Length: 94
Image 1: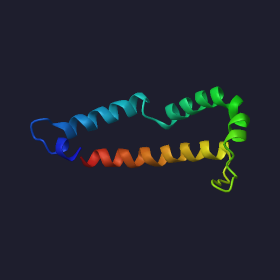
Image 2: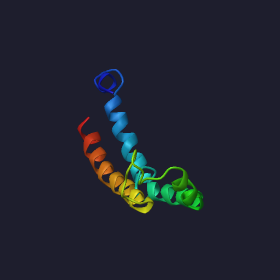
Image 3: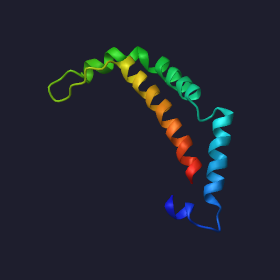
């Protein structure tokens, strides 16, 4: 990225910023769109949670995690919220 961003012949930084904010404006890169995909995948896998946790328990001696499935989903959504704001600020500095 550093090499591309500093290549005067490519205008990479400007093109990256334009594209980033174009996708943000269209809602493609957004909390709402990410949540839509999380919800869609949740519906696909939620029927298999019990089977998964029976085979791969999260409270085992070799692996312990006291957060449940829904808390993990919330963590992912919070991460995206924070990270998108950070990325908006970062892209503006290129």
